[in-house]
Image 1 (cartoon, helix red, strand yellow):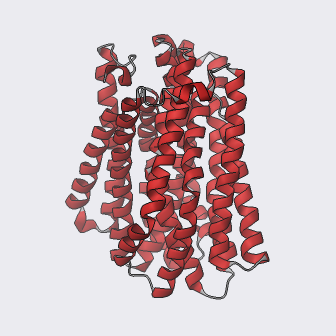
Image 2 (cartoon, rainbow, N blue to C red):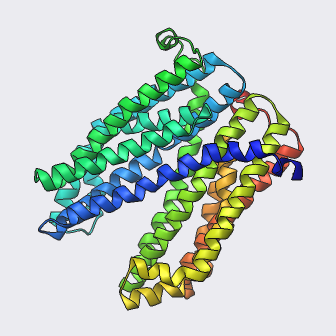
Image 3 (cartoon, rainbow, N blue to C red):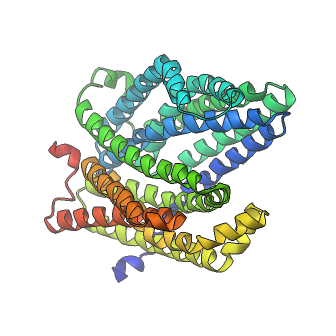
Length: 449
């Protein structure tokens, strides 16, 4: 372990993959702020409410389909590590084909699905109207948005994080510029905000395909046209992997959604305080995700090459820097937490309420870093079944802890969330330790199905 930590090239490799993804993640909340700013300056609050509700619907839908990126990263990284050019080409074509099939399904069925969801919403008629308007426009960006997941995963799997970084940054910058132009300049209101996002997604698709073509030529991969005929070959393993990661993501979304809705029953101050603290939690996830992405790519490459030593070095280097970042974030939350809260909200009651639960948040980075890293390890190893099972176990633990501590109000929710993060890491760590000891982890899971 110490020898690996003294390897400067290892640290450079980790940061070459992790840092671009962390930087690109910063543009995500920035886009949300610009959306809120341009829509928030319109005449009525229901415009902002409609964009918030419609945006949440579309974001959750696309987020649940994020398995397209994760599965593509693991499979393409393994193909890259094995120097299997045919497999690299096949993974990309299969991924894009699946993305466009899912996009077609979303477009065809989006109206009945949105109507069903809004039946359970207590929002005003005006907010529902503009949310439906926003959603019905944004859904036409699905072919580009889902294909971009595949493009990002494939580029990352080929050990290139700079191109996905530029893909995200350019897409979000285009979105911001078009937001201002369409909403403020042309006065298109909610329709303008939705159209800006759709056009930005397609601009990202064009840029992403250009990036892929460059990588394709640089690695001398087989002609894409020649591989179209074999798109069905091995598609079963991709579908199984995507299915398992989807079910895992569904469990994850269930826990976060329950925390939001259950918090709403505890009063306005608690809702506002949780919103402030959850924004910090998202910050932690953006930072940790960068290192998880690096772990995915590096682990997949090592498994593809059947190189146990490289796999071990990868895990040591990435874990070391994740721990350092987690310690810094924990220190910042512990020492400057109240000051950071004050930057987000100047309402005294919200500040006081958020400060009560700040210790829970301060513990999150050190507890959650393990589940982020282990997610990266198992994605790189394409072991979706293990991820699905451990997430189901963690979700059951979340609800059990909340029920056990229910008398403590919002403390029960934060205790359950911390326990959820811990059990995610513990479950995957136990599986990994067993498979590592039995010398079966190095074998690509998809090859054994």
